[in-house]
Amino acid sequence: MVASLDDSLAFQPSSIQQHEGFNHLTLSVANLDISLGFYCDLLEFKGEVRWNTGAYLSYGNCWLCLSLGEATPSQDYTHFAFTFDSAVMCCIQQKTAFQAVKQWQVNSSEGDSLYIEDPDGHKLELHSGSLATRLESLKAKPYEGLEWLN
Image (cartoon, rainbow, N blue to C red):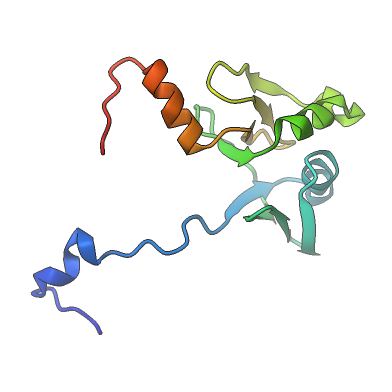
């Protein structure tokens, strides 16, 4: 059913359905082979398919698309966080290839985190916590000006 602009009930927040959440992330990369090595060999993403200008990778329920092109990563705090077990993060840090990885921040929040850049400078966070653990930590140590929204 298509709602007309006059159908005010169709535009009420209660009619909006959230189904599955986040679908996928696409990152522009300058060199597909180097990026595949970083994500698959170092971070242990699973390569699904590749073609001349891209590749699909998976990690848990995350679908990552690498798309060959001009990469212009954000220069601000914008970053992409992936759930990683703390023990897996330790294994990644012990790999020889990790020595060449740029770390862009030191962890200062709840949960173990590695803040690293991919070969194109995209900021990533490997994080062992969840929204639930972060919210629980805020009860004990709230951010300045924290306001609970629900």
